[in-house]
Length: 131
Image (cartoon, rainbow, N blue to C red; front, side):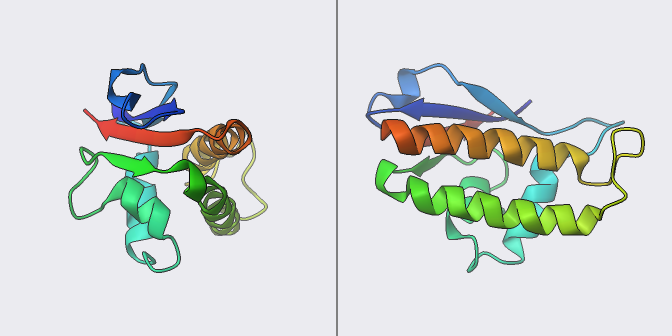
């Protein structure tokens, strides 16, 4: 299924909260956006420490994570940075009619960045857990 994303004003209450979104993992016929992110971040964990804590490539997609509210601006910055890298990987030829290799990852990163920007505004934390 994917990594369930939870937003909460209080991380102690987070596990009892319903996910607002699930980071997709793909299927046999479709790319695995979460796997692609894990691969990209694992190679550059020093540049993306918060994204690395989210993916925890060593523990796999089942690993839980917490981005505290005071770190959300940094998380948003990491998302913007990795999104720019992914867009370069696909190049300017990626379109709706001719999607690139990372089209689904780009869409997922945009969703997650929008969630993070709202959490920054609302002073919420972001949590997640895998299935």
